[in-house]
Length: 390
Image (tube, rainbow, N blue to C red; front, top):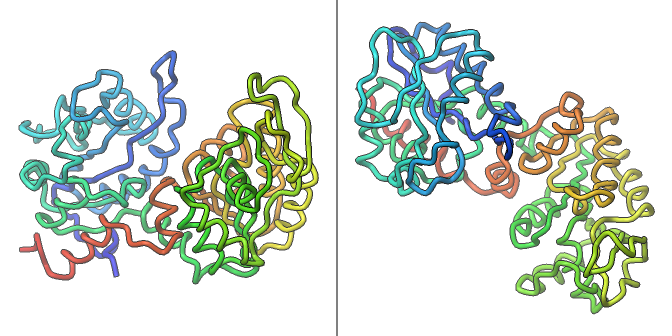
């Protein structure tokens, strides 16, 4: 059992908090376009300070700079937004290692961890430099828990540690044993490769699995159907064939298509088995939307991950938006598995109508697929063995 904030004594301790600071930036202005992850960090920050911490040192990453300093990915704007959200002064430093921590500052924010290639390499010497500034470690960065990185994995060998409130909430809400049946899974997205583990898990754990998105065309193709120029991944055709035998699996009955050369021309809806050779499928059709709605209305728990179509480009966002709105209005437990789906419902202004929106796409998928999250597994192992204590 992982230690939580309740198990830790922060009194007069210097606390090193690994937070999820990887917020999206507006392409034109460079400003933070969605601060949901920062808001999710605030309760843990406040709890640590309220429990008597001498100093709180926050670390995290933004983007994938590949071990190089990339100015737009500096933590300055994160520091400003965290100050607004917390109402507290934050001292932002210019690096995350080989630095002098100001003793008179209560909250410190370190520079982007991924400006150093050693972070993603899970380098123990890099972790030692991070750990040297604190007495205790808190992991609250759920979205990165499936990565063996220095600030998530190696560091657990060096300091006593626990998980923060956000991770605690993620583990509680993504636990199948707490979900009331019927459980209906709505799964979309472009590539079958990334979704095979969760589809397989849902075919065991859920009562119905509704499939949409680009990955649905591989299921059509393995039945010998014409799919035109639609997305397909024959590498995983054997997986798709096997899953088709499961009666819990439901595929769309109709598809919104367009001309392959110009996807704003020739837009129309056809049956799933009547896709022309020179067309491309870009969304699920109206009949399928209605069938999916009927299934979703039966649920006591809904797990949703992935868009139903090419939602970034209207009118192929229709099915995703319609289903988001119907789910939002249903009286049941509604869980969104992070990633693109979380961004989508935030843009639609519906996040407040969902029971739980996960902060981590990849980590949420791995957890729902029944896999262990390596960072949490390592933290638990080292906590049990007493590594970093005394």
